[in-house]
Length: 158
Image 1 (cartoon, rainbow, N blue to C red):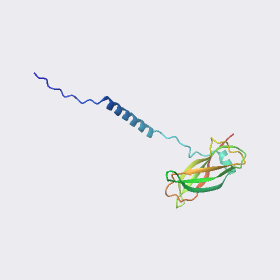
Image 2: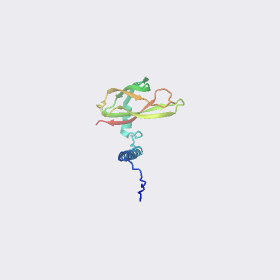
Image 3: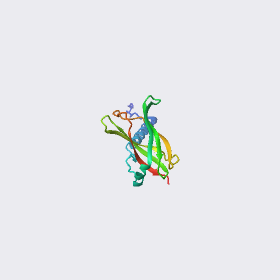
Image 4: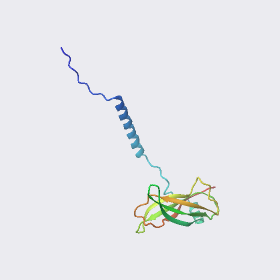
């Protein structure tokens, strides 16, 4: 009696099994990362009544807008100016809303940006400081005019 060969299933190599396992784990991790809840940046946080009252003591001056090109040949819009603290309290940080408008006058883009950084020294009473706000991804419908600037948040140093 002759022996007949038994058909055997092809076996996956150990390396291929490991590669496929790692790919499945990475895909699952990627899906978890992309579906995670994104923390709020506080863009819509209302200023405290105390900060709202103090905003009258802050003035923006020498504000101008210019467009430059970055190293990747993309247009960067920069707003430069000076903030002055005319009040009696030192400020740890100040954020402003920059509101860009379309050709029809409607607001089409709003971004909250810091003009006094918390990591810098406080803005003392009767002191001025320059600021520079770069924007590299403004919507196409922007009317190319100076955006509206409004105090968004004030944090007192003491």
